[in-house]
Length: 372
Ligand SMILES: [Mn+2]
Image 1 (tube, rainbow, N blue to C red):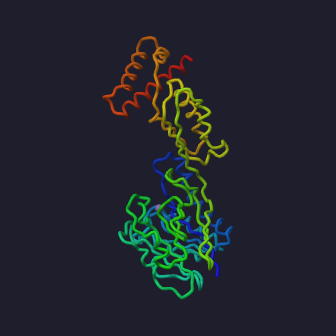
Image 2: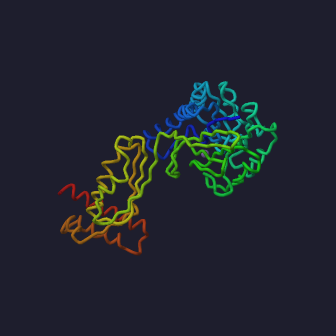
Image 3: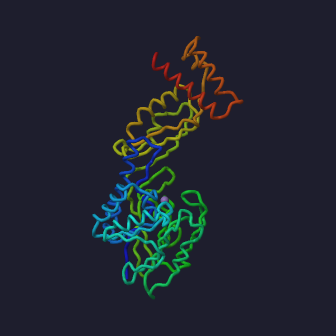
C-alpha cells in the first residue's frame, strides 16, 4: 500500500503586512492567495490528490469576506484534489464564526477537521487531526493522535504548535513532544506553526509556510510531498514561494571596493522585482565612501519589491580633510564640527552617536552634490 499527499501549513491568507508600503503590501497578499494554485500544481506534479493544511490557513479569526470567498473558490477550482483544513492558533476553533462560514460555503472537495476524531482518507489510510481549540491551548492536543484506527492501516497525524525543543513562531513555550510520531504510532506527523521548514524526526516535519512572510527563516518556502509505503515515510520538500526575503550582511572597511562588495550580495537584476531586500551594513567607512554607498543604495531601491539599507551599525571615519571639504568656515562647517563632536561624545548613547554620524554623512553628501 502506498499513499502520497502534500503537507503544507501557515498560508496566513489575508495577512495585511501593515508595516510595508501600500504597493508591496497588495502584492504580498496576492502572492499568499496564489499559493493555493501553486500547492495544487505541486500536489499534482508529485502524484498526490490530497493536500493537508496543518493550521493557520487564515491569518485572522475574521478574514474579510473576499479573502475567505476567494480562497474557497480557488480550492474548489482544483476540483481533482481534496483539501483538508485544520484549525491552527490564528484560526482556532475559538473562531467559531469563521469555521461556521467555511463549513457553510465549502466546496465538495474541501473538508474541515474540527474534531480530533480519526478520519479515513482512504479505507486503509487514517488521518488523526489535533485542531487547536484556542490561540494558546496550554496543553498537548496531539495526545489525541494515540486514538485507535483499524489494524494495519497507515496513520497520519496533523497538528499545529511548537514542540518542546524550541519556542513557537509567536515565542510561546512549546508543548508537543518531538517524538509524538513514535509515541502515537504514526507513519507521518505533519506540523504547522513554525514558518520555516524543519524536519523534527524520521517522519515528523514542519512544512513551513508555502510563501515567506518575513526575514526570519532561511529555508526556501514550500510544502512537503510525502510518500508513505511499507518501508516508512519518504518526505521531499517542494518549493512554492514567489517572493524571496533576503537579509544579507555587508561588513566593510575603509579602502574596500564598496560597489563590488555590494554587487556580490545582490540577486540578478531580472529577479529583483520579487525580492524584499534588507542589507545590514556593519564595519567602518570614510565619509566619502559612506556617501558613495548611500548613493548606490538609493539608486538600487526601485529595482526591488521592497528595499532597505540599514546603516545604523556602520561606523564612519572622519578626517580633518572631510570637514575642510564641507566648508573652510561658516555655518556648514560649524554644523559639521558639532555633529562630529556628538558622534565622538562618549557621554551620548550609541543611537545618538550613530544619528549624528548619519547626519554628518548626509551633510557631506549634500555638499558634494552641490559642489562636486
Ligand atoms: Mn502560523
